[in-house]
Length: 331
Image (tube, rainbow, N blue to C red; front, side, top):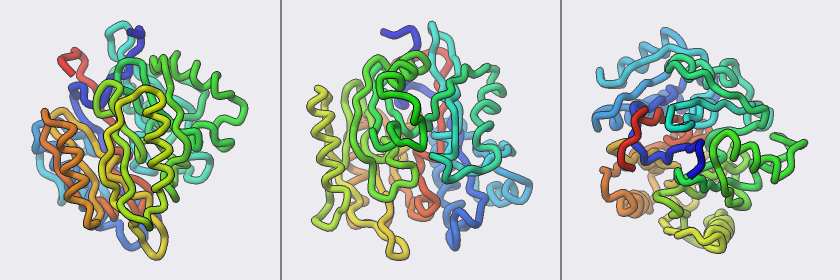
C-alpha cells in the first residue's frame, strides 16, 4: 500500500462540505430552484446523522439558506464563486496514517469560469481544519479523478490532457505528480467525458468507483442518447484494464432550452450512511436510483431532483467535498 492514501468516498467521513448557489447569472431563471435542490441534498445528509457544513456567500445568501435547511445543517459564510467544492475544495489524504491536505493549481476550468474565491477556498477550508496543504503547480480539479483507496484511480484524456490545463506536462509527468501527491500508483485513462460537460469531461460524470477495482458506468437509455459511444468506450477501457464494470441506466436525452445537458446518475454523492443520486424528471430515474442502491447495500440510497443544479454546470457530487474521519475505521 502507498504511504499516501486518498481514501475512497465510502470510507467513514466526519462531515460533508456543500456549496450553496448564490449567482443569478449562473442559474438564470432557476436560481431559486437550484437553492431548494441543494438545500434538500444538505438536509438529507444531515438527517442521516452526518455533519453538513453548508457554505454561503454573504448575509443575504445565508438568510436564504437558513430558511431552507434544518437546524442540523451548519452554515459557514465564505468567499467563493462557483459551488463546485469537489473541484475547488481541499483534497484530503492520509500521509503515514495522518490526515493531510493537498491543493493543486486552479485556473477556472481551463480559464472559462474564473470567479473570486475559487482558487483560495480549498486552502482556507484545509487551514481551518488545522491542515497546512501541500501545493502542486499542476492544474487539477477534484472531479477529474476518482480513486478506490488502493492506489488505483481513473480519469479522462479529454480533461487532463486538454491544452487549457497543463500544456507543458506529459501524460507520464501527470501520473508522477498524482502519485506523489495523492498516492495514485496506477491511473486508468478513459477517453471523452459526457457531451456538453462544462468541465471538459470530468470522470465523476462518467465513471465512479463503488468498491476496490469496481467501477460503475452508464448504459445508453435509447438511440437518441448522444453519449452512447462514450459510455461504451469507457466500459471497454475499464474492462481491458482488468476492472469489474457495473452498468446502470443513463437518464437518456435530457435537454434544457434545446441544449443537451450532461445529466448523469453517476454524479451521486457517497456519505457515511447515505448515497444521494441526482434525478432529472427522466422516465429512467427510478431504475437509475435502484441500480445504484444495489451497489451500496450497506447504505440507504435516495434520489433527489437536480435538474436546476445541473443548469449551473454540475450535480450533487460536484457541489460537495468530504472530510474523511481522522481515525480510519472499516471501509
